[in-house]
Length: 247
Image (cartoon, rainbow, N blue to C red; front, top):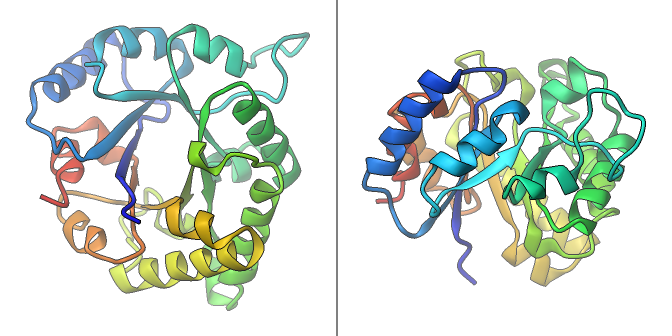
């Protein structure tokens, strides 16, 4: 079956109302491939702003959430709050959450379960660090991360898997199209063996890690690369080029 190409923009801790407003105007006015699902990951304080300003054809995502709906958890936001802002997606397990903020596989699994139960779509991130790739344990690492996510998913139609080699995020290094395709293909085989063939064929596996207007076309041509999670370039007009990578 054909999988709808998915491009996520992760704005991270960037932007203000002026610069994001300008970016949103650019996106709203751009000619974008109608066969691509586009979701912008805004800082939580700007979720309402992004959702109210972005054209309805674009989705919005929170960049994180907590594992319960409400309570004494200072500084956290819940899927219920995200949905109350008209936002339908959340990014979970990003390498910066794992490695800067110390989030465990277990916590990411619990967040995934709660977000899905609350009706959010989840962009679930996995990926190995440089020492893990050089040590030859890329598969072991990404399969272990994927298993914790898979154990917490009932409805895979609401999940996009984002493979982001940590050594390629924000470093200017990009996995070669062949390196990306190899991991994506192995992930699909893992899903077939551990979840089901139907899920393996239907779930979108997107690539993240220094994706730019210059690298996106060749990456997009790979059989098992179903889109991108874009960092820095998602704050620039070239994001439109990346959305249109298949055109």
